[in-house]
Length: 417
Ligand code: RNT
Ligand code: ZN
Image 1 (cartoon, rainbow, N blue to C red):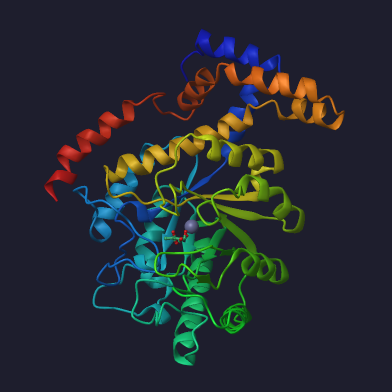
Image 2: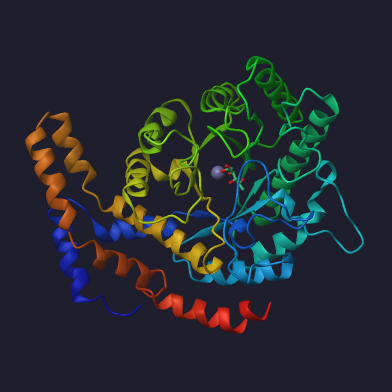
């Protein structure tokens, strides 16, 4: 480790005056894992079908050099991860199964062996693996419905898929020695105003019950459920709404997952975190950036992400599975991956050096004058020096130097695809 710069020491003193220990904040951040989604690398195409994305989500843009197939995606993922300071986990979808030579299994029949190559990838890099059943981009999604379909054959197929994914996640946890989070998100919904909102939700709950009835090892995996407000083509009704998913999760001991693109624009996920953590030991987040809709733009170091990070830190970030979820095909995909990750990492550091304790004391003693004044003063604290120090301690360059490596990679690897 090189000697600390004077700039950082000066910043440390400024923060100390607000009662903040920047060294402790950096140490805490270094240990905090961010789960990095594999699907930024290939526009959510996956490997198990023709790669046409549906389910009400969309990747826009046609920047050249997208990864096709396991070898390219792993190469890009590996390179992107190498540019992300701090501890990461990998986050896979079931549609990224890598079948052993001569084998193909449909989603209802995938097995741990179809993910052996990913376990090797993770173990070679000492990474944990999170997992997602893929309830979209598949012919068994009928009329936009999966677990809530009126057709029992469709429901059975997807129930089997859900159970298969629990087994695969248990396998990940056993093989990596690290807990795995399995996140259930179902796109089920209707384009037009429903005549019956109750029945599909009842069927969704019953299907989830059947999946959970298969049992899973809680010492190895956690199961989360992700809600949503609407999707493209299913604008009028979403079966797995916020109320449905929160109520189901709390009743069944699942981890509620909030994606900040999945609410009405004036709702704040930051505001929801404390309520959730009062009634659930753990929660999970998909951190994304919606522009006018759930567009899954690359995260930026903006007000929304800072507020989310502040609340996560106030409530205890160790209780929250922090995962990224964006997909941009209009710019270099690796730069998108890394930039979004760094923005969120930066927001977490920003939150960890926020004088939360001092400000909370002002609120508790109803000294709202001091609360306002200090909240304004802290805005000009020398945060950049702390971020640069974090990068240095994480073994990364502090600025945009990483982009040169991406440009080089684009020239050497991506442009030749
Ligand atoms: C969709 C959800 C979901 C997906 C991924 C690919 O709106 O956010 O999390 O983005 O599973
Ligand atoms: Zn999401």
